[in-house]
View 1 (cartoon, rainbow, N blue to C red):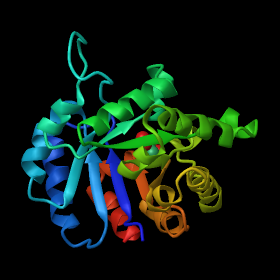
View 2: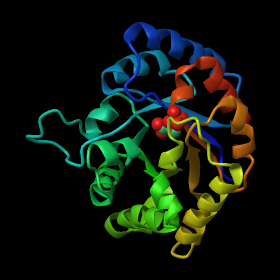
View 3: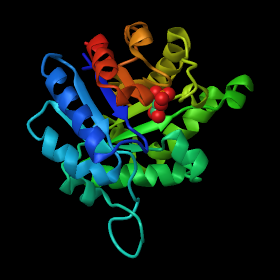
Amino acid sequence: MRRKFVAGNWKMHGSLAENQVLLDALNRGIANLGQIDCAVCVPYPYLFQAQNILHDSSLSWGAQNLSQHAKGAFTGEISATMLKDFGCHYVLVGHSERRSLYGEDSVLVAQKFKAAQASNLIPILCVGETLAQREQGVTEAVVSEQLDAVVLLCGVEAYSRAVVAYEPVWAIGTGKTASPQQAQEVHQFIRRKLAARAATVAEQLRILYGGSVKAANSNELFTMPDIDGGLIGGASLDAEEFLKICSSAH
Ligand code: PEP
């Protein structure tokens, strides 16, 4: 039985004052939620604040990116061990905004995945197709390429210490959510594809859905058999909304 998992991606939002209010509210609300895992992926400068506020909480925290390198002359980069220093449990890799705006390809994303695991961080590998790719009927090919890059570099067993987030690019921040059936189809495809190489790893892998999830649609999505929770962008900035989404996963 896979335990449900809901993670928030704050993207480049927040301030010390706003985060204090949001994290305090989440901290209070999360205590009543029971058997699910929840996390927030915050901007780097606020990891220290998240660690201070959440150290005794059942809400975990993580980052939104990391360097593929362990250390060295990489100005402006942040390593996996630095994230561990601030108590991170998770790190997003391959978010579609990193792929499209910063040119991260699947090979680089796989290197980041590997660097995360080497420091005992759980990578949340984001995969998903653009609208044009969906319309061309190549969704499965696109998602396969994104998953295979990790298999090639790290082996399929690496998925036993990771989370996958299926995020159709056309649904991120657009208000357009994939229907539960559309999402389930791709989640089932991901699980079956990995199961062909490692059945137990695939059965235990948590596959989150992301793309305009809100309290009003989360319940329907989370009841699909291969959807194990969500990666939440915009709605994770509102404590009440995020807590409702978390409780619908329960
Ligand atoms: C995301 O950024 O990962 C995301 C899913 O965003 P939103 O929920 O705002 O669509």
